[in-house]
Image (cartoon, rainbow, N blue to C red; front, top):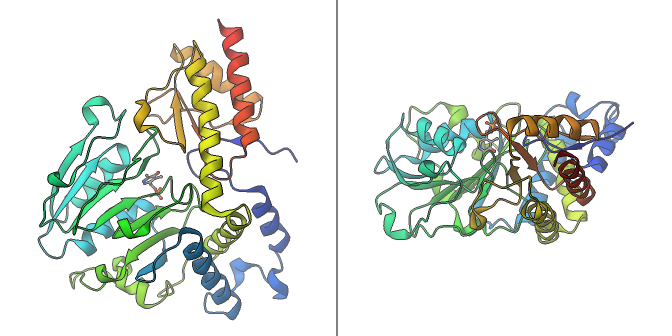
Length: 360
Ligand SMILES: *Cc1c(COP(=O)(O)O)cnc(C)c1O
């Protein structure tokens, strides 16, 4: 079996040891004579899986006791609605920062539920940097402030988390959760679709401060109310059991690899290799301002759409796949999530040099 280097933005590369373990355990999990997919979500074996998944996530990130961890479905896109449905419960106002396509979708959804103000945006600069957000911009009465910490499509990331004072900060961390150390106490709520840096699609992780639960308007559907999932330990209905099991295996792998401190060091090294290569190149350039660059999703362009297409095609033939940029921005994009080994980035950079040499 030949594995390729998959640079996809999501669903994305998973650690090979995790896939191999899942394969070994697939048809007979822990001598149950069943697959995890066939286990009751109320069984002892699955209870162990979900409990351990939460315990490991808490340990890895250092999640304080006054935060709940919820395993839900619906993707990050469902959180675009759940956040305003649950948290717009005092003034009905919220402040959003517009840093890209996903922020825009979050804003559009929130506008259905309350009075939404965009306090900073880099849309006029095609989202090539993160705008400044300082506490004076924030409405003291707002129920929350929303940011997208890593912009998967545009390749930008917040390097400083804005101080929102007493106003809870909500963050979409779909594409950078677990990529670096994180101080959860800076946030009221964090959410992330699993299919970028956690596991397979179908699972969404929510980390929410307890005081933000239980104030949701009465007419909120049970499945969209954080309280439902918090009260039931994410077992109100059937959760995405296999996704939670895979996430647990990824968390174990992360712990064994040295935790988030080591992950952050490796992710910074990997990103540096690619950024240095782009910097050095006469063919490839980065569209993103230096101070706002993501270490997870790295877009780059050559000098023409034809050269981009040739690059993507030839890279694929070398086992370097899914390097095409998002359809809204074009060019190339390499996603360097936790599971991407440094050898993958080195192969990419070597190929970029070869391509440039030949193309010039
Ligand atoms: C992928 C992504 C989303 C959408 O996630 P779904 O789980 O497909 O709904 C939202 N926000 C960010 C930052 C993403 O990277």
